[in-house]
Length: 103
Image (cartoon, rainbow, N blue to C red; front, side):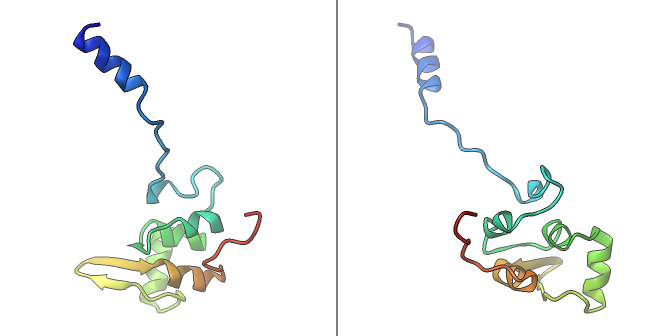
């Protein structure tokens, strides 16, 4: 067996890849973010695009509501970035951190 053939065989027998979901792809399959999707978010994440999708509003409406103090969350400002804690978003939406049975 040549070195190249052995490498090709090894590539096929590697562990199966686990599909990774990026923050920007949440809710794109069904049109909305589910509670299960929100629980999978990192502990802290960028405001946009998750928060507008979670509240079912446009990006510009989310920023306007934030500026007017009408959003029930307060993101942390790190330089020019707005960072949201997962626990804060879940609490604002009335979602428990622990998944319910059967979910």
